[in-house]
Each structure stands twice: as C-alpha cells, then as structure tokens.
Length: 330
Image (cartoon, rainbow, N blue to C red; front, top):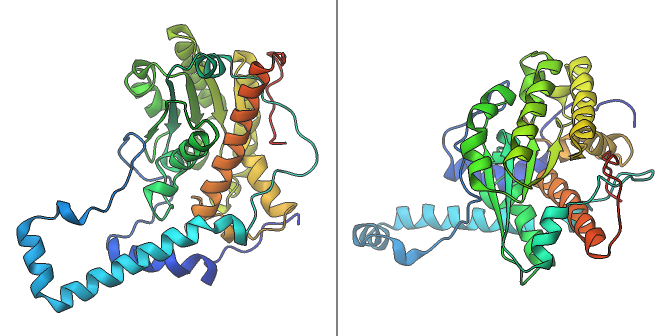
C-alpha cells in the first residue's frame, strides 16, 4: 500500500481499552501536539486490596451500587490486560521487509552484562516515551522493553527509567538533560526526539544541532551507549511530510557523526502500513499521533531484539564498524 488510509477509530480500538478508560479516566485529552506528562521511573502497578483504608473498606461493604461500579471497573481492566497480553497472537509483530542493517554494537551495556554488573537504561523523550495512548503504564514502551530484557537476561539486574515528558522536544529536553539523564549515570540512553519539533514547525536543523550537542554531553560524562529514535509515522506527522522527512534524515546524520545507534521508527511504522498492509488505526490511536498498545508493544519488541542482538555480537567478539549505524530490525 502506498497511500495513507483515512484515519478512523475502529471497533478493534474502541473495545476493551476505551471502555476501561471511560470508567477509570473521566478526564479526556485531545491536543494537537504531544501532551505533558510527568517524568517518572518506569512505573509498576499493583492492585492491593489490603492497602485500602478502613473507611474505604466500610463503604465498599455497605454500598451495593459502589461495589457494582468497582466490580465492573475491575472487569474492564482485566479485559484490557488480557487484550494487550495476547495482542501479538491477533496481529503479529513482524520485522520490516526487505533486508536489514545493524545499528552497531552496544559495548558498554554488553560489558556490564558480561561482568554481572547492574545495567541502567534511560528512556528519554516526550509523550510516546511517557506512554500517552497506552491503556496502562504497563504497556508503554519502556516497561515493555524492560519486561523483554528481563525475560532474555533473567539473572541480570536491569533497570529501565522512563524519563518521558509529554509535549517536549529538544529545547525542553536539553534543559533537563543533566538531571534526567547524565546524573542517573546510565549505561544506555534511548533518546526519542523530533516529533514535536515537526508539529510546531521548528527548524529541523536547529533540532538536530541541539541533539548533537546533547549526545556530546552524554558521551563526555561517561561511557553510555546512545540510540536515537526518530518521529513516528502517523497522520498528524505526515501532514507535515517535508519537515518530517528532513527531521528523519538529519537525525540519521547526527547518529552517524556521533557514532551512536538509531532506531528508524518512522520507516518501521511506514513499513507496517505500506508493506504489511496494517491499517493506520491498528497501531495509532484516534488522535492521529500517538501509538496504541500494539504499536508500543511492537516498537519495544523490535528495539529490544536489536539491543539483544547487539549485545550478543560483543559477547561473541563480532566487530561491527562504528560507522555502521543505519538500522532496521532483522
């Protein structure tokens, strides 16, 4: 498929997640650019009935209406969790068609894993890092990535920190780079950037220059590996196709210049639509910008696969040239 299908909200998208959100999230959000969210460590959710206060317990015990509302809400959350859990059995997550190039190895992460030392990964970015559009924090991409890495390296001490703040791009990110990234002493920084610059009609060249300066600061502060993530392929971004194309190209050049990896999210998502024939609404929510549970899950899966492959190359003594940075999942 070569053209973008009309964007619409389907029953596939509307069913369990939307129902749960209607019950549990009364405040709706609709913004032209990625919305604000507070940066937090990768959240772990826990439903613990024992933590309820005595007064809350009494109300639940004495109010049938309240008990019914709570029960329905819990059922909807369970449905959402089940839907996300088996999402790949309904729509497989496939690598882009037509060949692949390695993004290069991740020597610092690999060295830490081989030595049995803790590994800290910082996911730095805006609302698609924070997880806007996911039905639960569990299903944002940093948490999905953490779960995959824990499965693959079950004895390793791996922490993935979610440092995504919605609505930001390079100018705002540079202001918190020291505290949110460098002061954490990460072994790997995954920097998602460029989408909001496109939506705001900012100069792609200025954004690329700030990103290059930021990578230089990260590299000067330690031995962290860095992977850039470019904008997403979505209707809102595609409305500014010229700016988006420049941004994707310039971020690729920055990655090559600074000898860091890049995950070409734009090309990967375009492949889903144009070559794998997935409707855009199957991986993007109704705002035409943010990914849904499946989109985040497949993005995390492909990124994690490449991280695991890159680490494996170091362990096997495979030398991938530093100037080989253009990446597609194999």
